[in-house]
Image (tube, rainbow, N blue to C red; front, side, top):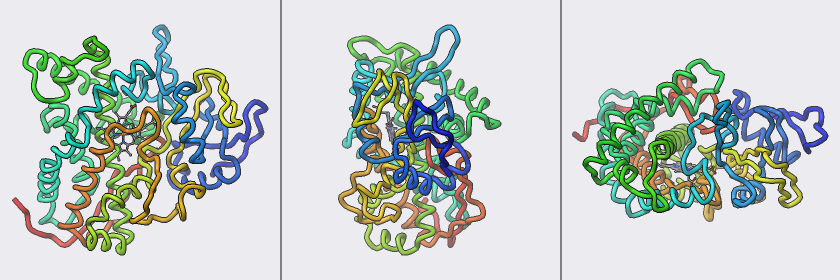
Length: 417
Ligand code: HEM
């Protein structure tokens, strides 16, 4: 639990808090409820020291205060030390672009990406997504067993992401696997360094494909990156890799986590599952409630650009702060019965897709993939049973709140072919 420590004179409300700990993964709703109540603007000495914003209004205000806070990341060219960024601790010397950038660089890249993720572009991918959902279910439907993670919620966003990029589908797991591990492992876990090294393959493939697209452009994101311009200049190799890394990380793990959490929830609450089967038109509204309740992006970071006073909260220049979206989304000041899933909650002012300038560019795509995956499961294995003893959570949910294994059994059915 988050417990008070000896006060540091310079910071109000110091607590013992580690968002990458097992205790946090197991108890975060309780930890955040206690912080919101007793110490909503808390200071943790872990990972070099950082604030934790837990109330909705504070999280929103910081996310929107783009002149005062940044998620830009810098790397010292001499020591290689990484500073800032949108994770605590900083994840790697590679920036996630545009998430770990600031104006004016951010505007150019964001405008560039917006077109690729517009509602119309996303809608055009729905039929292909549905076909892949059915193909993935066909692979297991006669066996009566599925690991929702390995067999379904991981590959589907992987395929969609590969298609958006223009990579062969067969590459999906060589890219998705290291991204997935980097997100769920703690930096001191065995395997973290290896996952990091395995990203070299992704970077090498980006380089190869960019060369190819310069010679023969196609209608895909790699061609846009290879031949497009941001602010009147072509993108250099490093920025192309950093944008690609962001789309990979955004594309493959967040929707996976949302859908896996939802399938676990529906397995444990058959009355909710039945309601979604009986009222399929409720799914888009329920999707927002699952984003609120599970907040897959658990609590990204911001960094104070200068000394800042925000509604009585003082930040020194360089102070880091966790925006606990997962706490804000359960703030009783904003949500009635916040610890309950209400499938028809409306309106739902959740900030599970973020707020302010970095609000998720892929939110339409995430919703579409989620809807297709849940519809596929509810129509073809409606009475599935989660094998509770086989469930395995992420080692750390500090970046993304997800699962490593979600095994289930169901009555075998027929392939669609
Ligand atoms: C359920 C699924 C998803 C959730 C919950 C989610 C959530 C978020 C959140 C909370 C942020 C803001 C982070 C911050 O405040 O620092 C964000 C940013 C972003 N997301 Fe998503 N995301 C999801 C799916 C996706 C997908 C499918 C893509 C694209 C393939 C994507 C691409 C991005 C990008 C590029 C940004 C950075 C935007 C910017 O900095 O302007 N996300 N996402």
